[in-house]
Each structure stands twice: as C-alpha cells, then as structure tokens.
Amino acid sequence: MRDAALPLPLDPELAAIVSAMRAANTPPPFSGTPEQARERMRRAIMAARERSPLPVVGVVEDALAGFDGAHVPVRVYRPQDAQPGLATVVFFHGGGFVLGSVELMDDIARKLCRDMNAVVVSVEYRLAPEHPFPAAHDDALTATLWAIRNVVALGGDASRIAVAGESAGGNLAASTALTLRDRGERLAAQLLVVPGVDLARDTSRIEAKRGDFPMLSPSDLRDISRLYMGSNSAQAGMFPPSPLHAADFAGLPPAVIAVAGHDPLCEEGLAYAARLGAAGVPVRVYRFDDMFHPFFAFFEASAAACRANDEICQGFAAWLEQYALRVAR
Image (cartoon, helix red, strand yellow):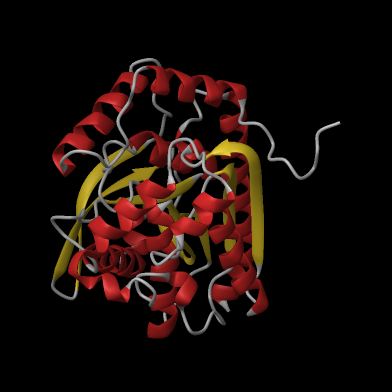
C-alpha cells in the first residue's frame, strides 16, 4: 500500500516526456533571451502539433477588442452548430507572462470551445519583459470588458460570461474577476487552472519542502516574478498583481480551481480556494496528484492528462450553467 504521506507518482506518460527532456538537456523555460525562450516553446509546440489534429470547432476569427481607448488582439472561437445565447469564456493563456500566444495555445482554446459548447475569446495580452506589469493585467481587463459589452454580437448570453486561465493566465483571470467586482460588473464564474496567484511567493520554502518539480521549478518562478514585475518588484505582494493578497474576496464569481500534485503552485492554488470559500464564494477544487504543472495542454500526449482536461471542461460547463441564473437575476 502506498504511503499516504508520499506524493502520488507522476503519470507514466508525462514522466516519459520529462525523462526525454532531461536526456536532451533541454534548457530551463526562461533561460536565454526572451526571444530564444519563445522560439524554443514555439518549436516544441509546433512539433507536437504535427502529431495530432487540432480539436474541431465551427468558426475561428481574429478581432481587435477595444474598450475605453485601449485595444487588445483576440481570437474568437465558436463551436460547430452554434446557436445564439451560448456561454462566453474569456481565456488567458499560460507562459509566465513571458511566453505563449493565442496561436501557440490554439489547441487549448479549441478544446475549451468544443467541450464546453461555448464562445471562447482567447486574449493576446502583451508579454514581459518588453511589457512589464501592469500591461498583461490591463489587457486582460480590456478584453473582458469588450466581451461583456459585445456578448450578443459574439453569439453569447449576458448571464453566462466567464473568465478562464491557465498558470499566469489563471492569475489574469482571478485578477480580472476581482477588478470587475470592484467596478460593479458581474461574471457567472471563473476557471483557474494551476493558477499562480502570489508573485511574492517564498520559493525558498517551496525548495526546502520539495526540490524536484518537473516542467516548472522554484527557480523558474523567480524568473517569472523578476521578468514580469521589473522595476515594480515592491508591488509583488499586493493586489494587483497577486490575487492571493487581495483585501476582500466576498462577492466574487463562483470558482473552479484545478491544481496538480507535481506543481510548485499547488499549495498556492489551494490557498486561494480556501480564501474564496471562507468569504462565501462557491468553490469547486479539482486535484490531480499525478499531473505536472502544464498538464492542461498535454491532452494529446497523455491519456490521464486528457481525462483531467475533460473533467475540468465538463465540470466547468456544468458549473457555469448552475450559476448563470445568479447573474440573470
């Protein structure tokens, strides 16, 4: 019998990917210049994409989301056989505020659109270090306000607008939900997948507790905070940019939070869920102890990661329907 105090082993298919990367001496994700790091990610994702077809949706179109004089590129996905009045999900990709793009996370957005039968607005927010904090946070808010104001034209229902994000994108989703609440705007729900909600996190404590986290190390987390916060590093322990340090969590939209066992952000995500729950916000936590940090994007590489992704998409779709009536009232 497995000792309950020990972590569940990493999923074998994901473990094989980690072993292959280590054998190839793959550099840490944020090493080199930002351009070099982005090119490494692009090559890896495009190579994987050649092995698997993209999830099929109905219509994909690029647009420019504008609100109050600011503009952000977005990509809008609509499901096959789309009918008016769908749920609308504004999605923020991961990548530590430095890596990633709408194009590279095209497969994730497509799967969200298909599996949730929802309009998905994927946001091309500005990246650090060229555009440090608060650029990404500002862009996330602009795109979401645009989606709210244009929900009917997008094919959506005003009572079923949600934000969703993975990793750094989870931070942007949570931050946007907090800011919209303070502006008097209402969202039906929020989906936070392996969210990084504390840019002032104690990485030394994480290292002392457990040294080996595949795909995202404590050192990587230090790089993320350094590159995104830039000269604003003194603000890292405030909100924004760190939702975990917000003063008040009451009145936020119901949240689905997914965490991974082999992820240095696991405790952070659970702490955020606890803060929301203590404030009376409905919260559902999905915990996948055999997954590593970026599992949500590995649904073609691992059967277990695919099951986890499916469970999140299906669960959030049901959650969004359940709480849509609260916004409608």
